Image 1: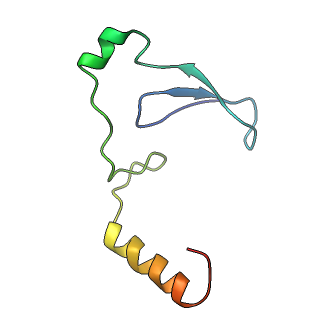
Image 2: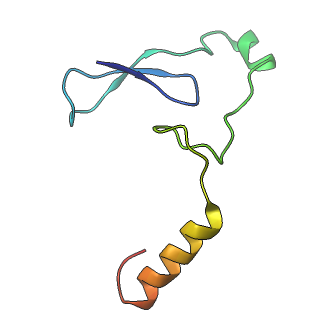
Image 3: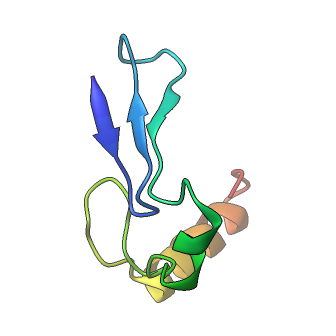
Length: 70
């Protein structure tokens, strides 16, 4: 199974739950770093959804307040 992520790296995995290894990386040459742009920190790698940082902050604060690990 091959999966990609927002950093542009393609990972190969033989079975879900096992560790993956890098199958392809878009920055294989140093010259590629000149034009490379890092991913937006607001976009989730797996679902491609935008992260609501305020909602996440509130959720973690509620967890801590109730004695749970954040």
